[in-house]
Length: 457
Image (cartoon, rainbow, N blue to C red; front, side, top):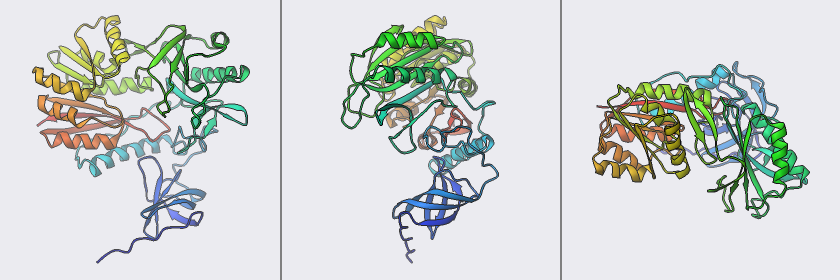
């Protein structure tokens, strides 16, 4: 017997709805006449009056008009931009509720996507879940002839003009406002993504969380920037710790933020920061976790799951500037780090040198291309650590991992969905997911990082 398909709901129609569960991006989910409704900003157990904004055959999207019965975990957002800005998704939840949501999100992905049955611990949270970010990327635009600089609205390319951001390091706010003043005072050309005309596209700011040093990056549609001397003077007088100003050239018609060419406008091409007692050089294009405090917790758990005794050979895939590799090298016999970004590999080698760590080597190349070659060379790792981007591991990389057959794999993931997929692949090839530790690297947002211990059966 065929089930009758729920009919579409009219756009702008209003309904009462009970929120039964949460989607992975933080929307509340309820049903109207059997049709699944996604409601931005709603929480489990809440009864809401909503307006339909998008209607499809199998689901609809709605916005809250009124919360008729609020959750006990609902709080007033701390940030004045919380209802506009797409940077934070969960400020209306108590922090305890945020952590609970993230734990549930990981469990659901592993079970539903990967059919993985394992121990998932409660998400490790922060004592102070504010002002934690050491990097920010601000799009720049114009509105009514005024410069706007901030973050995009949720699911939009409309920029929310910011005065401050409560999840950024306080120095980042100061740099952002100083650059904005410069753009306005000297009438600097602003890029238009529709016409592909104009100059300044983004402002990227990096701060050494422990060192307090600052790198400002102008992402531009060209190489000639007027009044740079004025900007250098403004940043130098207002920003304690300002060390370098970089021009990143991106002339492509793309939504990728940064280009490949960097030109030093002032100072040097890098800043330093510490994780534990390990010193790292950070360049414009190199990846460095945005939450320095939680990074230490993440890497300690990674070391624990690696189970190193000093006799192991370790491969660190997607190694970036060597952050995990250098931690592993202190406990391992030999570590090989693999990374596709050449500048990151250069930094990784320098980071090994400045820390006096000589039992680590770095190989430039895509993990999915280098790993099969390592397998062919007969290098037999005891442990493989992977920390891939959100898309997860390429299947060729997973195939090579299974072929070299390490005793242990430690997977660091920023996407529970692709994590679940990759764990399923490894479990089908003789591995067992022992336990999962979620870590809250991104408070006030729906994102969650995980460290996973995987053992060869």
